[in-house]
Length: 91
Ligand SMILES: [Zn+2]
Image 1: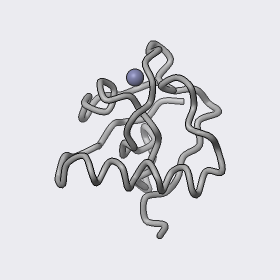
Image 2 (image 1 turned 90 degrees about the vertical axis):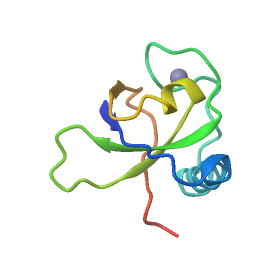
Image 3 (image 1 turned 30 degrees about the vertical axis):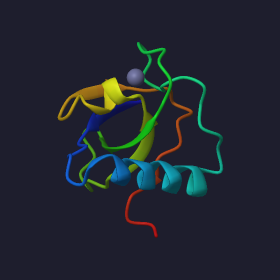
Image 4 (image 1 turned 135 degrees about the vertical axis):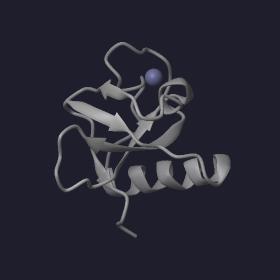
């Protein structure tokens, strides 16, 4: 699954925590043991904002990522197809 990392830093680590908690709440999944990026084996620590590559609706989703992958703003990341995408607008 190809996603674009659109994570914009705006309010620091606490915002990440909230997104990660939102992902855990709505995905009904445990935090994965490893970052879902295929080429990465670090531990997921933050909730990152992504969009599906080529998605005309431009819906923003939260996925868990390690800090290094979360910092790849504007880049295309390839993640496991089983990764749950939680729309960010849910509250
Ligand atoms: Zn990673």
